[in-house]
Length: 211
Image (tube, rainbow, N blue to C red; front, side, top):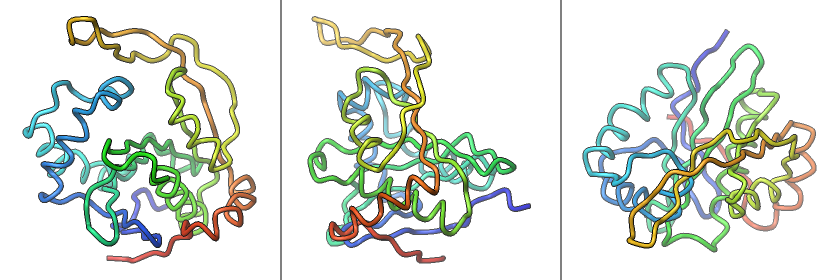
């Protein structure tokens, strides 16, 4: 039984999702220090160049080679600029199930890139990798992430109460940790098939570029 994802790039009309490389380090560092990224992820803060180097050179590649999932840099096709990241994790190869997480850079928000990239990964996951379940978990206050889940056709399955530690900015500009609920969403192949036609005219279909 296959227990690792292939070393792959996934393309749409506007985006290329590919493995990270060293040229992504400065933009990745900046993206991970953005206020919304700090608030809703568990990434270190402040996020240093050393953190980004460790992510690009060790952690992200090990996600794939270790069978845990795959981490892809999301870049604009025309400019090659980093606009986000998509990360499959907690992969269960027997159940053909995995969890997806995503971050969009502040300079790329409002363009639909998160929806487009997640949809492309879902299509590849279901059609090429024969997976049966994609799961998302969004913090209760993270409405932008919830909108992505809704747009790609995910079904809300329930709430994990008090299951996540988010961050909130204090009056002095610092950060404090707060507990929050997690909303669990899922997407199955049959849910996804009803979504693809809706996005077909928006440039979201993907094709595979095997390395």
